[in-house]
Length: 617
Image 1 (tube, rainbow, N blue to C red):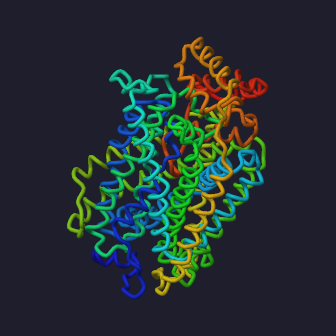
Image 2 (cartoon, one colour):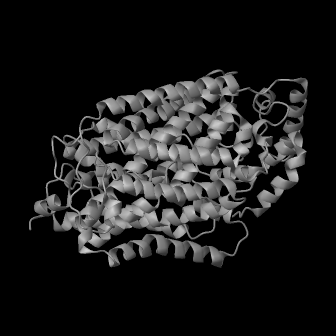
Image 3 (cartoon, rainbow, N blue to C red):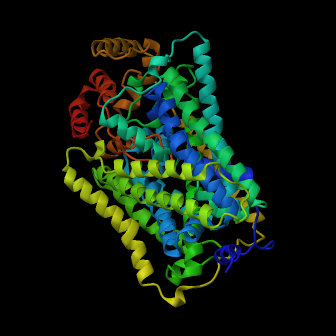
């Protein structure tokens, strides 16, 4: 059988009546929304100018190989990673690859939607941020709403994901950069040094190495939307364009907003327990525009939900395609709804996500366990990348004449660099993170290794071992037509919901009050920071951000969910499922501890215990 015949045998046949085409720009925006957002900006702003280095090095050794290699593979073979690895290695390896891509999302959704819950709480009623019930409700409502939207077909997902990226990432990101430039243009000194001596991050031993290597995963997911390549009119030409546009947007979104925040907000004022919104609030405080904070919060929620939709639609689709043709999953999981969407897979995944979400929201100190499992899922994901790079080399060697719309330059070298970067990230995953605290290294290694082997290898092996000939149900068909009215209704409901939410947020939000007590405490904090040898922010900046009660920093910092937020901030620079915990330099927490000593001393002992529990380099 020829290569093209094999390709056709493993890919759903195109049908002009069934396929709803999307533009390559929409696919680029989908890819960008699945990889990048503003969530890690405050975390990386702590490193100031060095954040450029922390993003560019991983971009060269991981983003570039992943983008170029997947562009070539998608321009020649439909179906995404399952078909690439099936053609390059074997069909069982193809199933393993797409399973690893699918499995790593299990612990992604609770983290992402937990961020949505805390963001909404911050702009509506901060007390809700400490409520497990609120967090659980938001996670479940948002996830199941996403399942419903995804079940309507790819074109609906593309529209909402693209809209979420523009509204929730590109617009607020551009606003942050403009404000940062305006701040410097007014003659203000940058809060973070912008000299050549600060281009490289300060070496803090093992923690620096862990951060740099783990940042490779910031760009994970670039290949994921290749499963939708058959929805493009000219896949060979349009998918590479989409990848190059997405690559540029991802770099801009990661680097520029983080720099802008570092110009305005001193690292000592970036509270790791208050999370992302406090950092943005501090930026707007410099311009007396804190009323923009709740609006930005709603926009960030839109971006997060758009990114969730792309991950719901992508990996599960690839798992479906190979399972229907090769019979790797039971027929129940292969069933399609009337729009040709793998609804049953999404529902089963949703049940698991719901259980995890409930545990994350209600069980005290579960967040440390949660982050260990997030390491396991990223380890599993890296197996997929190792297989993809090997398959790409074999396909170039064994099928050199197979039609490709794009040929990556120096493919073997690119795959070698990408493979080495993936392997390095896999190995560094066995270094215990700060969230693991003072636990036994041996136990950590056993959990991570056993979990990765079980979830990444044992589960797909069991599906493969016990498959039956009757499980082969045929090719997956495309989404049906006649969905325009339903899509317009979904879009209208989303717009109305965002407008209402924005109005409620603005009406409910209250900035910090500038009082004599606030200025007195600001002077105390300046003295404490100076004595500790840390950078001292301007008094007005401290007053706007912390008021007279410490603001978000002092809002129930010992709460279990606050600890979960802290753990969520001690991560690499990833915004998607590649988010992974790292080793923290405890100097980053000194500023927050000093704030508490001045504004809310009743919490100092409890927060000191939290810091002591963290494992540092």
